[in-house]
Length: 272
Length: 119
Image (cartoon, rainbow over all chains, first blue to last red; front, side, top):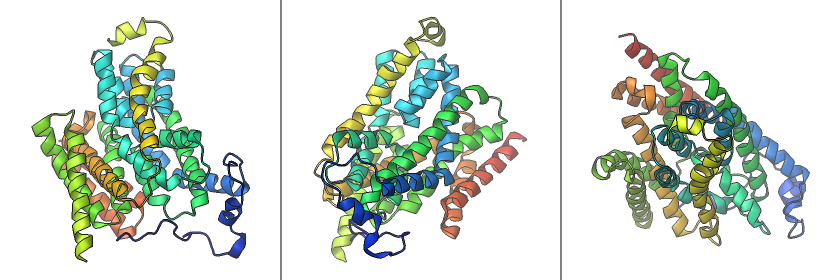
């Protein structure tokens, strides 16, 4: 049913025969997963370069607001930057700083943060199998998982499957690290800059996240199930917001809409 | 907990808060995912379902941002938020380039926000 088998032939790499990088990497002994090869480095930098074309800037601009929110909540600039590096989840950071600024108690803040980050569970589960390699250590997997945020997931799902298996991990880390570096800087900049912007530009910054996510979802959609999940999630979230309130609406929309979309895809696939 | 209490509470307190109340409750799901996804093939049925749930969740996030927008985005009327999304998708579909879609959508939104702000 799906258009792509697990190991798609490399899309961008010209067919240069048996001397290809993936063949070299496969000959490495097991347990040598941490040894860097020149092809790893090349894939890392290609990932970083691809991120700098658009994604890192979208993320960077959208995280500006977190910096200014942290300042409003009374945090030092270093704590705002730390939150970007170790939390690496814009919505969770927004909830964290905004609810502390609103005077919520710490257990309530922690609960709201964890509720918003449940979304990282299915996203991380969906992307890690794409990054798996023989002999991969737990540290690499936890490291890759740490970099999974909504944007990294949606971009990874689109960019990683066409790559040869051996290049996926270094490419992903290159892509993620470029985003992290840009976001670390823009969090710091946002801490001091935002608030001085005229309304249309400030609104434009806030709009960056929804428009980028929408375009990325459309660009990454591969099957009927994907399209159905998009439509159902978009319709169900506002409905659940009215019915269930603002804490559980996303979870309900994701579970109900996603399950329905999965079944739609199965049914359509079986009929064909 | 408020901003004044935070400012007076010692140098390391805000960093500790970020780690304990921000990082740990968020990171736990990524760690759980590492263990849950072990042994799962990327084509497996369960992961196809997980993928559908994740997409629906993200679509829900987008809808939420559009219908109950944060901060100054609320100053733009609802239609003024939905039309630029359509412009962005159209821009992407016409060129197959994500950056064109994002810039087209952004241009539409800033123009509408400018118009709404000056009326």
